[in-house]
Length: 330
Image (cartoon, rainbow, N blue to C red):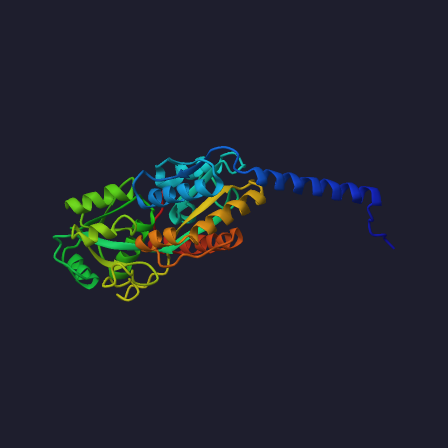
């Protein structure tokens, strides 16, 4: 009969002491955090929706921690450059990533090889909002509804173009999904950000786009572009007359979010402390009001574990969409 291994009382006590010491060190590190300037890496150009929200949280977190939080914009390669820079930062909470769905949940399905693994190299901290993108058309395009747009595009095959903030971006994939469902032929024009895409749409250089809501609602209200559909889960309160894709007969359930991440080996105590501060900011009436003004109707208060589960599900869902529309990038 084989005896089960039984550690000696001395060894067991030593192991417990080591574990307690490690836990105490982690807790002590969290108590002091942040003891220096924290950089929030944003993988987009300044002035877009991601940047705008990141700066709002930089201010809120700075007040909470009584420490300086700065925003470092690192656009390029559909968010890959900025995410990679953040993922390879020191695992001490001094370099935090604030990013959008496509950069971590869509890119793995688009590219054969990435310099980072969103699951292995990043630790989710907190989700910020859940929404969709507005489908916009230039103001002089002779359509006012998605039905009219589809009819016009079919009557003018391969004569319309649309822009997005990059190949494989959420705006690109959403339009490709609509093209596939409606049987449209249109040309994609990729930009390095949402702002220049919308600027050229306002100028009439492009015909249509799916763009983020935070930086486009006001230009819609000003009549500089027309909004004909929304890819989110429900109608936007500030544009209640704009129907969703689902209402318009083109099913779409892949929503977008913003979120905070840190390098994967960051101590859990620091992750939890950051999460608590972010969730606290999301309970601030002023921030909630601002997010509502930016048309985020769904503002979940997530734990790191809940956000991790959301990321895992979105990796599956967006991968299925990428395969269905046949978009791949080198």
